[in-house]
Amino acid sequence: MLAQFGGGDWLSTIVWFILFIIFIFFGPRLMTTQTILKLEKEASNLEGMAEKSKGYILKSISKKSKKNVKNEINNFMEFFAVSPVETDPYGIMKKLDHIIKNYDSRFRYFVDQISPDASKDKKKNIKNALSGAITTHQIAKIVRHYVELIKKYKMFQYAMIIQMQIPLITSIAKAAMHATRAFVNGIPIGDGIGSLVTASLIKEKVKKFEDEEFVIVKTKMNGRDVWISKAEGPGASTGYPGKFLTNVGVAMGGIGVERYEIEQIVVKKNIPLDAVVIKVSNEEALMPMKKEIFDSIPKAVDAVKASIERSKKNEKILIIGVGNTCGIDNSFKTVKEVEAKVKKHAKKKEKKKTFKF
Image (cartoon, rainbow, N blue to C red):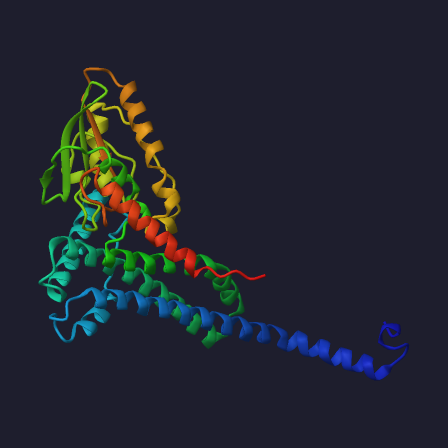
């Protein structure tokens, strides 16, 4: 050991031991401080995203709205729904349905208050944008809470856990922020691909169901009677398929109430089901639709037609397009419009890229 410090250099050895002792006693604290500084930066970044999200909504609201609309939006960012008690699982779906209805009603009321002169589709877009902004705000708020907790009690373990999760947390917050902007501007998001595939099959005039926010049309495909349905567009909405349909099932995400209502009837009546799934990540589902997702339409349509071909000639078939209809209308003509928007967004994204050599 002494040879490493100059062949018996006692001064170097003493300095080394002093530094070693300092590191033993103060190293964890220094690492905690360094980690806190990084987390502080990330928390500030998330809070910036939350402010941007609120800014997108404010820009979309008419100047004729109330003067204190900014304060009202800030207050609404704290709104959240409390989950029902799950220790008694009986009737949990009805409880969830009740909460969702009230949650949705509160959003609609608030949108009517801050933007009373907006069109029906515009109000739907603002409603969904508010949901995206609240998500970003809540993420920033939770991260800030833990950062302040870590700073107060110098909890290095907590700091490391949060730091490891920050990339994923930031990715979700960024996706929610981009979703907010997409909604206020009527830009289709990745989650709308199911609705877009269905729209590409609609050639006739649709029948609208206002309360359920759904449309349906009857047509012929491969010699079969086929009903094609989707959430009503182009305003942002996923509709209420569980309320609209009582004799078919669907592969869909969400909290599960709609699927539960549909699948109860499906099992009871022994109705055969088939699903065509287009895989997207959680972030891609929220962000403006990527060209790669849009390009999946032909393959999805072929899969639908193949499924119809497998059915019996006398069977009646219902096709449901699941997904958010932001910027997606109710006929095949909307595909060209969406394609133009997707290409425009892709070009903007390409311009923002920087290359280092």
